[in-house]
Image 1: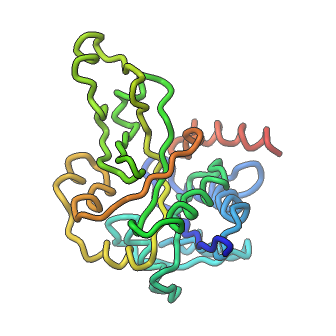
Image 2: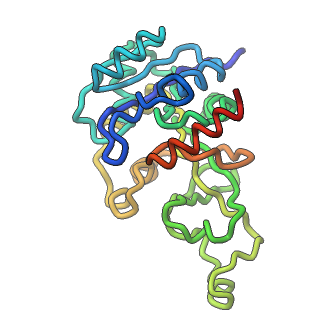
Length: 256
């Protein structure tokens, strides 16, 4: 049976560092258009942009892409995805990939990878991605979220700290991984079933997610499994600043 999945792209106008980010021009078209193209290249059966801004809604619909106006008071992107699923009348078993609206360089294969990983098992209602950390300094970078897996590829824990902590090695060397166990960086792309989203929205927040500022820890705290698919490398970073915008534009120009 062919892989079937939907893509929802949350796109907010209000960005502290880069206001109007989804509508900023990249090689002649708004950034959100490039993100939608990545979803199309991944062969998603349905693509929906979720926004709380009329300007983004009008831009997206003018491109022939479906857009949905969502409430502005959601506490997380996951809650916004759940609202889209309700508004669209999707079924409990449907698979939804959450693709961020500021990721125009995401490989389309990764979108399919996370959907296929979720579709290929029955233990979890959510799947995500990770890649091996190549630069040892990244192990100690709190902006690089690490994940540790069990033998079946399900997450044991996510942290901004260096996990696993090599007690003797780090004490002796001051912080150089031994290489005995590959360190994995979490890639924040998720696939969910609609049924999982409905459960998630009923859960209370946990102290763990507050301490680490990692929303996915709520899922582990409530005793649910997260499947982690390992991919070849961490994708290009998304757009948060003007410098990011220039970097991404150069990359897109190279691929034209």
